[in-house]
Amino acid sequence: MQILKIDPRALKGNPDDARRSKSSPQADALLLATVKAVGIIQPPIVSPETDGGNGLIIQAGHRRVAQAIAAGLDEIEVIVREAAHDNGAMRSMVENIAREPLNPIDQWRGIERLVALGWTEEAIGVALALPVRQIRKLRLLANVLAAMLDHMALGDMPNEQQLRTIAAASLEEQKEVWNANKPKKAERADWYNIARALSKTRMFAKDASFGDDLASAYGIEWVEDLFAPADQDSRYTTNVEAFLGAQQEWMTSNLPKKGAIVEVNNWGQPELPKKAERVYGKPSKSDHVGMYLDRDGKVQSVAYRMPEEKKTKGAAASGGSDDGAVIEAPKVRPDVTQKGQDMIGDFRTDALHEALGRAPIEDDTLMALLVIAFAGLNVRVDSGASDTVIGPGRLRRHAARLLSDDGELSTDMETVRVVARSALIDVLSCRRGMSNSGVVSRIAGATIGADSFLANMGSEDFLLCLSRQALETASKDVGVTPRQKVRETRAALVSHFGEERFVHNSALFAPEPKEIADLKKYGDAFDQTEVEEDGIADHVSHDSDHEGATDPGDDPVEDDAEDGDTTEPGIDDLDDDDGAYAIAAE
Image (cartoon, rainbow, N blue to C red):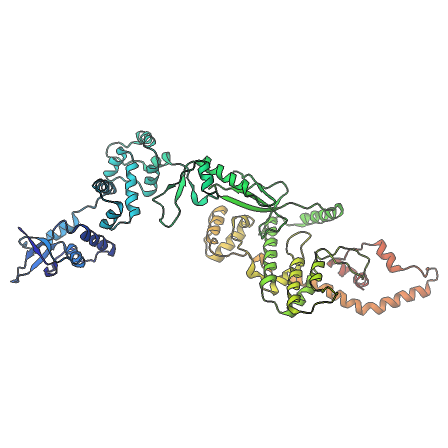
């Protein structure tokens, strides 16, 4: 055996080498960086050719020779040995199989030794082709109890999450927990329970709304989690009370107008004031804002609406109607609850208003929408055709924008379009309650394509309003397997719709055929009014001619109006008494 210096390009590969598969690019890069940094530590083993040639065959070290060539080395040291009778086949097998890489403990100890000799973390990373973050992660083992390290060196390593928890604890805490959970000889350690005993609640800097000034005032010191992904802000603190106190002070200092700090229940949900109604769509200026801290310590906000005081007569009338609906309602739970219908009304109204403001609408369609908008159930207009006096509300401001200082009506189509859209937004509404426009708002939304403006309904709040059957139907439609428990199916849908948009079929604007038919009955009754007009007039004239006891000054129509209800008749009244509706319409 002898040692020679030779050009690595003059060496020949061994056809009987056991390693035929190519190594990974990462492994080659690591070896190349090592060769460039410290050279070849273990010289390759070569042997003379046995078939009459005068070259040298590589017996061990093919990758070292290849990376020496890649590093541009002119000469390397090699160990020359006589070739075995099998041309080194068994030697090649043993050399590639009977080896073991360094475990993390030995890697850490080696890195600490290099640091003690003056190597920097950056230089070690270059020499070993490892990122500096990985070097720092290994150096965290310096925070682990020596007894734990000795056990880890035997091959019983915790996983990365458990190691992160152990390294974050103090040595006193580690010693106490290790003494209580120390494994017996030849047994594996219960790293799960050890890590759980040392775990602490972490509050992350990415969830903090406060700045450095409040962090300093509350004594919060951020610690970087080197086990987390490098592209994330992994700073955290275990001082939970200080973190929550800083968050609370930030909320108090940054409360919006009509804002309040609300408490949370045992499930981490905000507890709104009594009789408050949560707003799931776009909040208006009159709505309130509640701020609270969720389970992760993040500042969250929720919009809610306080009920308005209602007149006694209106409340009594609506209460009677609701009681009747409850009696006639089926006992089987509907697909969408009453709260879900309220949410759908909010979603529809926000989508309808956004479509009216942004979607392309032809002028003829816009004028047609104005006509049907004034047929909405929520529209109240001063009319000169009857004695009913109802306030005009907010509609005057739109008329004012169409008038000049001289009182002339503007005919500029751009101004008319803007005012028409604004008026439609004020008039049309799908919200449940007295502001509901009825089927005309659904028709308007379907006409201008407001379905595309509907918000994502795949949230926990809305899916809680769906029945089991509705949840399973929605799951099958999107390819999600329904779970045995409803809450598990709901959680799977929430996770699925986190990146996709979900709109429940019952929230689409397209009206039901029965709603269209009921609306068209009003038109049929109005047409019948014109046909029956002459007959009604002749009938009144005939009665006045033949009944001499009637006072000429009396007005039978006015007497009927005083004795009867002056409110607009419903759909059912049209079928029973078309003549009475015709007179009222006239």
